[in-house]
Each structure stands twice: as structure tokens, then as C-alpha cells.
Length: 226
Image (tube, rainbow, N blue to C red; front, side, top):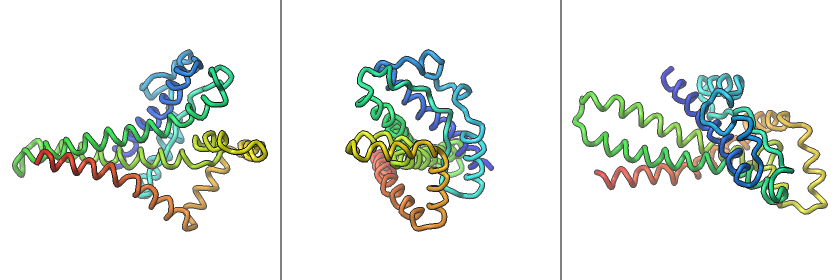
């Protein structure tokens, strides 16, 4: 149960940070909507979606599935951005990039915690809290890589779809944008596809490939302090 709690708390913080990143970049590019509605805060209460932020992560943790979740989307009005055509993909990219930043921070903290762990003899009282922190940082890496990779999939309404749409030729863009009307149905269909087809294994391999450099960084830091 302790690991489930860690995973849910890490997911909640990570999805909130993800949404705040969208709003912060939108603010820097001219849209004050998120700030005006009080959404540029790491306080989870304005952001939490009971289903996506708590129930789904808890169920996934209990079933040993890869961790996933979402928060209430931060409101962004593209028309208020200084250059909507170029700026909105930047706002979309801010979410996944913020998760990679959190994964980087977790990797550094994991390495530093490993150094601290090695400073104490076996059985010392400090080792238990350090073990707890190791689990937190490891979960932080996995969860944030999963959020980043998943959200970069070019499937409406995920963040990657806005970046992909910007790169499409005009002749294809209208048909692609038409998919947005199906919203979360596409995401649910994709999750089922990952569960019942080799797409899930491909996603897992992609995640491992992205996770590896973060774990390597943590290991390198731990060795430096050994």
C-alpha cells in the first residue's frame, strides 16, 4: 500500500506541474487566462480531476500497470497568444518537457540519496527514510517519463497532436484536426490497443530507452560520491 500511495502522490504532483507549465508558457507568450483563473499554482486543489488524478492512478498502481493520470486542463486561449500559429505548439510542448525536467531532478536526487545511503552503516536509523526517498525518486523518473512519452504521441487531444498538426501540410491538416471531435475516445482506444496488441510492448521499450539515461545519471552521481 505504501508504494501505491507514493505512486499516486507522484502522479498528482507531476500532472499538476505539467498543467502549470502549459499555463506558464502561455503567459510568457501573451495569454494571461491561466494566471487570471488562479491556475498558475502548484497547489493541487484547483487542478485535481478526481478520476484522472486519483482513481485512475490508484487503479493502475494496484494492477501493476504503468502509471498514468491527468489533471484538469489549464485554460489557454490561442487567440490571445502573440503568434498563435507558432506559439500554441510551444504551449503544448511545455507539458511533456516539464515532465522530463522533473525526471531529471528525480535522477539527480536519486544519485545524491544513494551517496547519503552509503555514508551510514548497516542498521542505522537513517537508512529507512533514505530507502523511502529512493522509492520516491525512482517513481518520479518512471512516472514523468511515462507522462512525457505518452503525451507526445500525436493523437488528439494529447499534446503531441498540436505539435504534429503544426508540421502537417495544409492539405492534410483539416482532416487531422477533424479527429479532435472524438476526444478521449481516441485515447481510450489507443490504451486498449496497447493492452491487446504489440503496441504496448513498443511503448514499454520506448519508455525504457528514455528512462535509461536518467538512471545512468543517477548511477554516475552515486559512483562519484562513493
